[in-house]
Length: 112
Image (cartoon, rainbow, N blue to C red; front, top):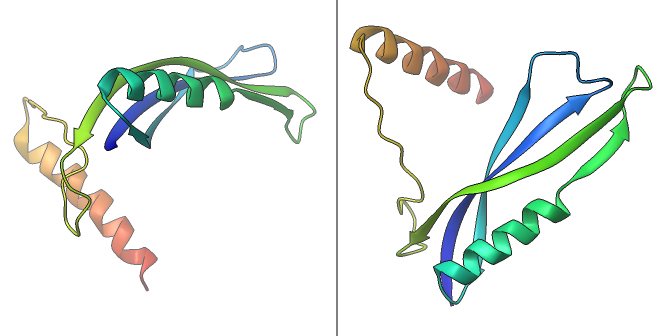
């Protein structure tokens, strides 16, 4: 068996849906024989992940499975192994670095 990371996309709709569109991108660990089987399994996980419930305002909140958009194989499950990557091209490198450092600083506060 092999390990894969699957990106599964859900849309979140609250009440009548008259709000800014919300999406949840989840990275899920999938064990499968091959990439095709991993995709099939990830689709099943997405379908099973659909849900609806009432929020505090008594509005129905729905999580709608949209699609599996990526399947990436994992070579090794070792400490420090690369699980996922995404390349970015930015017009303003300094602004991007500042945003990354700000997010990193927020994480550092969690440990205190």
